[in-house]
Length: 466
Image 1: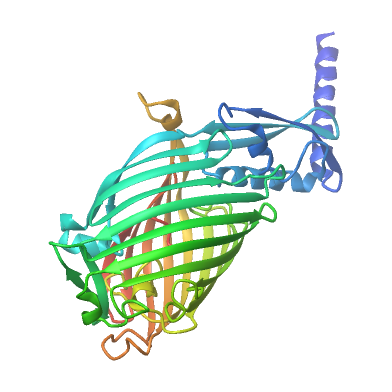
Image 2: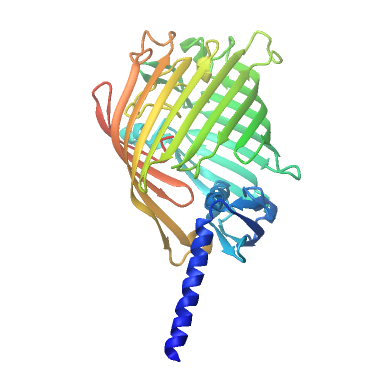
């Protein structure tokens, strides 16, 4: 009898396994998403989560696509930067039906954040001298996920090298379909020191401890149209007013677009991006295409003043080659269609640079930049729990990546070429690096590089390369 019972159980188990194998092998068949159950969104309104899903209750999905749909939806939710962790699990409730369980761990949304920033172009230029005067300090009060609707309210008071007082408020989902958003912002900035020109591939400074070297104000209103999950369009109109010390026009008559020490102008900006990256703060898979067109000066404040058209476009692609290997490359180009005032010069050495040239600034009206990385995942994301801290901070993770990189760039700037040897020259570098990635979107990179000048150095950065 026992033998017969054992045989029946074994047969039943075998049939169940065969049925499961058959379902998994039936990749051409479809599965119906019966419903989505939400857990952990104590603050976040459910419709904010629903907007990021690539499917909805009642949809039929090919079995071969189900895993990819869940993974993409997880990435979309993580890229909201509202959650520490997101998981989606499909629970079978029949041969061709599933129930999706969506679990999130919300971040800390209301917090006073201390500010300690370096006002240099990057950490490495500051570390050479480690002068405290280059530090910005202060505090901001941020309310992310305001009203549980992914709105953001921010108020900042910052002192130090660049004093800044600003506020902003953004609503990303004005309409029922959550395709329209708006942002308003205002800010006041001032410095006792400013860069008035570039000489020998280095910034030249004017300092006036008794008076402000520069003051400027900005007021902006913007509209965002989210065409679909991956594509966004942005439109903004802003007003800018800048006043510099009387000495600046003497040192550089092209610092402002007009004679004198004050310039006021409107800025009109349109930008578009198509973004399928898995994790925007440190992507390993996906594609980013972006472009913007910006017109400084609309002939309203001063018909003979500012008139500068700027365009920029970029392409970034991230590939997963194997379980632990990844390849990424990026191409960026920027064109000022007329000679910009020095106040608006921004080529390589600021936000964009060829790695290995961190100690230089290469200014000009146009630039092109190629960056590439081959990565190896040394340590897969490892989750751990921190004791004696609030729930929103307790669960963390860390991951390590080694990378080999090659960068190349070129800056066109006839107005700078006479006194700056790196302008109108091909720039390139190779190197090795180690990236540390952890929660709350924190990245640290340590890189050793060899540039086209034959210089070897080790650099530290606190954001992703591209």
